[in-house]
Image 1 (cartoon, rainbow, N blue to C red):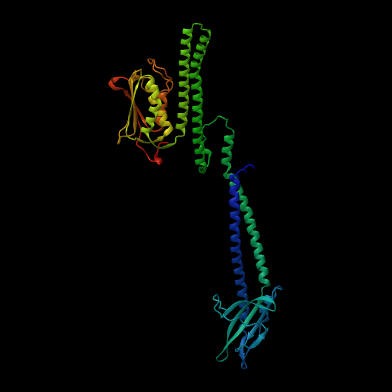
Image 2: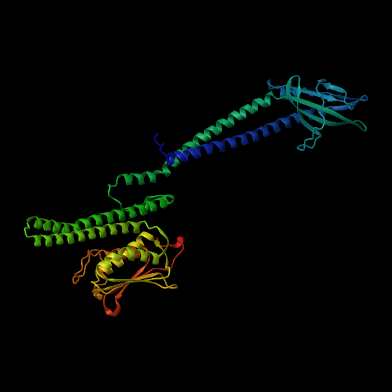
Length: 474
């Protein structure tokens, strides 16, 4: 498969749109200018043609019972001074009979309209005479002596050679001017586009000069206003990327720090087991190793859960879900741990609790709440999982009968890896930290209180009312 062709640059795209558009506009303007000039040329020639016809018509008179005329040839010489054109004329009598000029000049075709540009009874039309295209004016001239005798017809025809020569000259001049205009405008467009795109070049140069790990925001002050949204998007993306990298670095640092001690203990216990010869003490050492392995596995699982939860918080996928179903599944999954410690795990939630949130994160929140309660509740204790009733804001409450948390320590238990000095239960101090991060991502509030009878700990997570997808937490 051939490699995809790189997309055209912004400068190439702008020039590719602007220059053809300019050429099209200039072409339209050239056609319009040419037509305007051609109309002006034809109007000027027609006016001159009418002037000749009037000069001839002024010499028409009625003598001896017939129409007579003495043509002023100087008027015809005005046209014939241009050797490329010829002028013909014909004067017709009252009955259309030939009086003077070229007798074979054809009469006007029927239906030729009278010109509205002049007061004279003039009719302009195009015709053909002696194999050449001609422009003809037919002028009706009143004839009278002591009384009106009728109308004589004066026709003057001009070949189009002079007009065509002048028209070609106008067309060539128009095209030359327009081509020069296109060249100058294209040059201006290229210069302006390059100047307008220089800030983008500086922005790119600034990014190229950055170190690989530099994710600091781009200063939008030097960027054009139209690129502000792009710069803001890049800054937002780099901020999210920096957050992801920071979380990865914290995960690696936490994992390396937290796993170092249990692995060192496990190695020490393995060394003792290898040197131990007393079977009873060997079994004790292996039991201690088994507990260390279990704690290490739990720590690794908690670290992975925290990393997974933080990734989900960065890119949440909100949907409509039932908090009661999520809590029920979590309790069923963790029930074996409660049974192993003879803990009474009670689930109090018979009604659906609609909630808009990330299903994966909600499972992690409920599992950590319940697991934390089971872990810190002694054998034969009690853990209760309660849900809000219909009509109330969505909420989940987990109450245990464990050792509880003093009021002065309740804020610190949300810190990662923080464990109470008085606690004798195994743990790594990540469960409530994960709960807090997920609750914040859902806009929820966490309340801590004493359990029933002042013993144990009660954790209540209250969520905002269900929202539409458009207004869900982000």
